Each structure stands twice: as structure tokens, then as C-alpha cells.
Image (cartoon, rainbow, N blue to C red; front, top):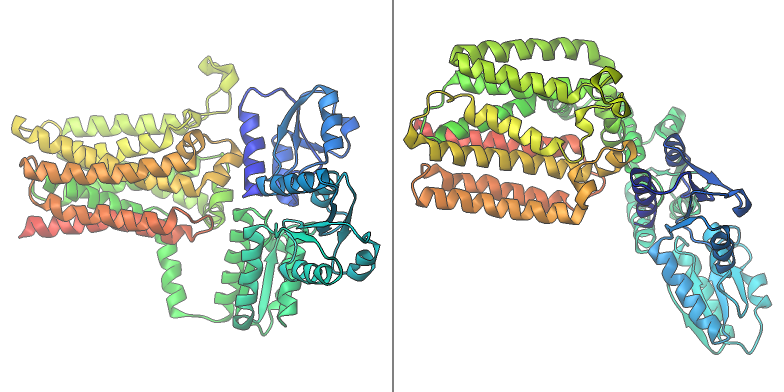
Length: 570
């Protein structure tokens, strides 16, 4: 939490009107790849306060001492405190006991920046103890003093417990505070739990990260060989020879995209060494999802649903048109997207598009032509509206030039408008599924059903896209894309998604009751409940199988189409 919060803070600072330059006092977190990304965004680090002259200084997640804060304040620069709240709590504990004259013992690594900062609060004296010099340091603690014991938040649990036991045996009054971060404790416990299930433990994270190194030591203490690496490029194939099962864990400062890349590569190595029919089936499904063929099926399901809700029969022409439109819209927008967010959110998809960009572009253009042709077969008005939507969609993703009269936005696109993606995707799907198949052929008494089907379709697509934005928030922040979760916050977005499902359920129930739509509306409540289950599964997840997630959310729209088609056929 503290690491993610610190990175989010500096990225948000860059988006705001904060005084420039933005510098971090020391490395913000212990992950070289993330620091490189921040530096590419103009957020650099300095190693001494003397180097800070103007702009905004960010206090790193590890915190600093009171003396260093005073020196920063004397500089007169803007100060943003990105200290992890859990570290701030330890600072407050040390300050409280130091005011009472208590000697402070910090169980941690003496040279770690968090520990150096904490020691600055021990005004009544203190010492640092780690597993290497425990006995020597214990002997240096003055007798007759009350002792306050805290832990570096990423310290090894066993080391802390051993030190506390030793201190209690030798000092009469020891105030113990187990300040090890819950995430650290959980990761170490998970490594212990995985130890008897794996032949190798892969630990992903910066070489300079103490808590990452400790995870490797915890694994080795359980008799499991460990491999500490920073990126997927560091995986030595020879180390995997003869390995059956691999466990993967990561340090506190390791971003999700970095972990995903390691997992993806390990899976590829495993599948190539041991061919599995199920693995081939999963690979085929992944390609279907990555190329938006599955999303196209979802668009067809939504079109069938809208036709039935309007009291119309399901025919192949509007379904095929909607499927080709959804397929082409998403495929070409993905190809045109130069922001690089997909590289962090779903590295496997980024790699796939890098390999097949030319072929996918041709397929997307052919799908667009096919959608236009089918729309013309429905009606001229349908064709005109579809072409207009496609032109607007292409303009939305196209970078502006200086000739557009907006020189400050050169190289950017309308896609960069804050929070625009999710509602526009929802409107595009809903228009294609509910309006285009019937435009110009809607009797007055069918208008209420059309409106209900449009709102239902837009709401369901908005929900699927917004939840995907929640999962993609880390990569979107890095590239500066302002999605709804970034603008209003994850918790507010999740609350909005919960209420959206409730409102969609009420819409269907009341519309059936008032006979605006057929009784099938009650059956479709099952798809809303299914989204509720998906929400429970994924809303608290930070590292998920994105292709499986997209398969589930779009599969739910396919299910809606099946329910509707079966109802229409009976």
C-alpha cells in the first residue's frame, strides 16, 4: 500500500499544477524499473538536500528524520510527504517513548533509509539490531532503562520475534510493538506455505530491496531453492532444468506489470517443455480474447438481447453488423493506441500486437468494410449513422497536429480527454446493438422498449469497461491516462459500479412490471447477478489473469444473448 501510494502521489503531482521541477529525496521506492519510468516522466531523484533548490520535493516512502525535514523546510520549496502511513505510525511510537526517556531498539537493517529515518526520532537514545549482530548490539543497550522495541516495517518476522525474546530475558521493562507491515507478514507466510508445493521459488523485485531479499531467505530457510530476479529477461533457463513446480512472489515495491511479465514467461517456458492439450485450448481462447473476437461475440449477444427487449425477432443481419462493428472498433483502437498503457496493464497483449500489428490492421479494416456493407443492407440511414460513428471513433484515437489549431495538444488525441473512454465505449456499443438495427423502423409504441434496451446495453458495457479500468489503474497512471478510477478514485468507482447493477436490476424489473419490455427482462436479471459475482471476485484484486477476466465479463453478455434468443424461439 505504501509503495503504491507513493508512486500514485508523484504521478498525480505531475498532472496537477504543482511547482516544477518535482524531485524525490532519495529513490522513491526500491525498484529500478519504476524509477526509470518516473525519470522518463521528468520526476528525478536527488541524493542530498543541498541539491534541492526549487520546485517540489517529495519525501520518499521510507520516510526521513526530523532533522532532514527541518532542512527541507528551510529550503522554502514545496514539500509532499509520501511516507508510508505504516512507517509514520512507527515514527510516532518512537517519538512518544523518546519523550518519556525510553531507549529505542529498532529491529532492522542499519543502512536502510527507513531505519535511518526512524532513528532520527529516538532522541533519548537508540540502537539498531539485525540478525547478523544481534548479540553484540544487545550488549550495547544501557542497563536500567525502559526499552521501546519496534521493527522495520519490512523486517523478517522470525528475526523480530527472536530479538524480542532475547530482550525480554535481559531487561525488566520492554515495550514491544510489532510494526511489521501486514503485507510483508502475509508475503513471508505465503512463501512458507508454498515451500512444500514447489521446487523453486522465484522472487521478483529490485536487487536493492531489503524486503525482497528477505523473501528469498525465507524460502531458502524452508529448504527451497530461490531465484531473485528483477525482470523477465533475468530468468536463466538453466536454473529451470528439472523443475516441476515454480512459486512466484514479489517484493513490496514490485509493480504488477513486472510480476505479470515474469509469470507469463514462466508459463511459456513450462508449456513449451511439457505440451498439454488444455494449455493449447487456453492459448486458443487467449488469442480469441486478445483479438476481440470474444468481444465481438459479446456485441452479438447484446444485439440479440436488445432486439428481444424491443419485441422484435432475432435475425442474423443486425447481429453480424454489431459483431463486426465491435470487433473493428476495438481492434483498430488498440492498434492506434500509442500511449503504452497496455505494456504495463497486460504485457502479453502488448507483445501479441507488436508481433502481428500488420495482419491485425488489415483484418480490422476488412471488418469495418463488412460492418458498413451489412448496415447498408439493413437501411441507408443505418449505414450513414454507422459510418458517422466510425469516423468519430477514428478521430477520437487520432493524434492532433499543430494544424488543428491546438498547438499545446500536438501529439495528443481526443482519447486523452479525462474520463472519456468508458462512457464513449458504452454509447458506441449501445447504439450499435439497440438503435442501428431498428433506426427508421420504430413505431411509436416501440420507443419505450428501445429506450430500455439502450439504457440496459449502455449500462452493462459501462460496467464492464469501468471495472477493467479499475484493474488497469497502475498502468494508466504511469502513462498519464485519466480514466474514471483515476479521476474519482477506486472506492468511488466501485461504489458507482455496485449502484449501477442495482439500478439496472430495478430497470428490468419495473419495465417488465409496466409491460414496457417482455418477461425475458426478469431472466436477464441473472446476468446482472453474474456481474455482481464477478465484482466480488475481482474488485479487491491487484494481480489478476486479465484474459480470463475479459473472457468472463464478455461471456456474460454472450449469455444474455443466448437467454434472449432461446426466449425468442419459444
